[in-house]
Image 1: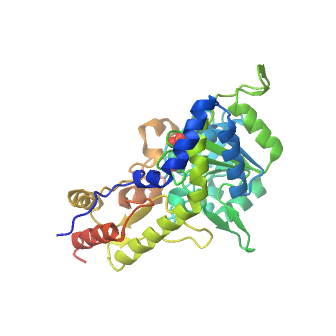
Image 2: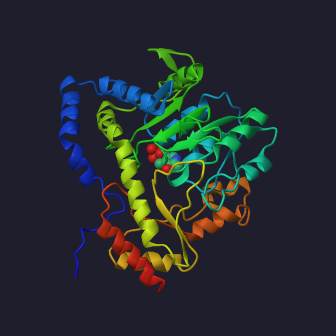
Length: 378
Ligand SMILES: *Cc1c(COP(=O)(O)O)cnc(C)c1O
């Protein structure tokens, strides 16, 4: 019998070993120079990320949730203003809307690519709508061109939640390629360790080509202050620290390689899982590259039993996300009901994400695919 390295949902150890010397030297330098906050590594990483994204400005911050919150705070919104987003996402996207006294208005996602459906967004626009906040779920972009058209037509700002798709390209109809996060007025991302560009702790960033807006975002993330101890507006304290910036600056150089490895793993999964009637492998949107933050299947039968069978075979899997936001107890006060977002509700019952990281081997993927095939007797 073949023995396998234990399969992990996310393997950060092997990836660390490949960059260990450089990361440790950089961290030691931070320790020796005591520039823990706003030090050289933060400036270097921020500039390199701006170059990678072709962004006029990148504002580093404490985490992806803060990035979304600070972005919203920069827009001079009033309590009761509406922000349209998807209910099939991580809570952070909607949480910051609620926290700021704004109203999260959900629009359903599409069943193929799992991202905001522009037709449903159009139906949800009212005279109180101010912002559309698409999420680039699992690693491919929402249909940004129709969403931007809607935003222009109605005078709305678009904030991209790009926590899961850093490095993905949006392909415009006229042939332009623009990095995810750089299509709307503001992009937000997370450097949570398991994200495609992950720190060894928390981190986040906000990106924009609108320089006055970028200056305001920078001010809000730093206590509403441009000059130390002089405060123009009420802000927050949200910073990326130098140690995380060292890690991110090294990993950024490998991001495209990491993405290529994820895409290769995804292609191997696609091949290994083809022709199983109960399994729908991830569709690729024609307008986006896919950076596979997750490799997420839809399975039309016995999803939870499949998860147990995988577990028994030593294969971890995750359900992202088991309950759409409109059905979470935290959102009960907004008056949504079961049935309001049928696609999101169906996906919550059918999705299952398989192990996805830069270190998956062909043997591991074969084992995972044949376990699924056996489960469905296919
Ligand atoms: C991870 C994530 C966030 C939040 O990022 P943190 O750094 O954990 O605060 C927000 N939105 C989405 C879609 C995410 O996946």
